[in-house]
Length: 265
Image (cartoon, rainbow, N blue to C red; front, side, top):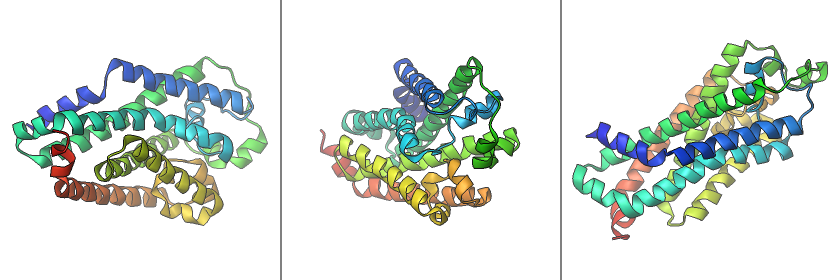
């Protein structure tokens, strides 16, 4: 039963039009980087150049917009999916399954798959873009500014960048889910989620020593240059945060299930 509802939720949240929206977003992000930064700042290697497109925020004012741009398809698609799920489908699913926990954990699994799939598509789309655009040798000034990016083993770099970015965004999606369960206003919950993300970035930019305690910034590797905290700490802290938030969300949906699902009937 759980496998069937996972498949059902996955087919609801992923459609060809949504995939095109995701691809278009990451193409736009890559083109923005080429237009915003000098050609001698982007690594010659295609893998490192791809990582550079997600190496945020190098310039706070410019890259804050790119951070939000990358999040847009995830939060918009997820928000619309949840709005339809709660208002139109969930009561019938619960009557059929007779298990609130199956519905909830199916939702969590599909949300993680969705975030993972989004960034997998994003990385490959970006790799395709950078492959066709020539770059110059990276200047010494840029190497000094972003030493970790240019000197680290590229395989180790992309694994950590990819995993922490996915986990950080998944945590943000769980925060969005928390607001959705509490507030019956899709636009307001979207703004609250974005505000949490912007607040984390702002605090991290002003107080670099606080970055170690801001899980939403762990996937933004430019911050690693400001405060060389342990990546093991990042994984530990963000996984604990995810588990805690899943437990809180489940308790909320149990306590408010009648309000959430029955008020739309």
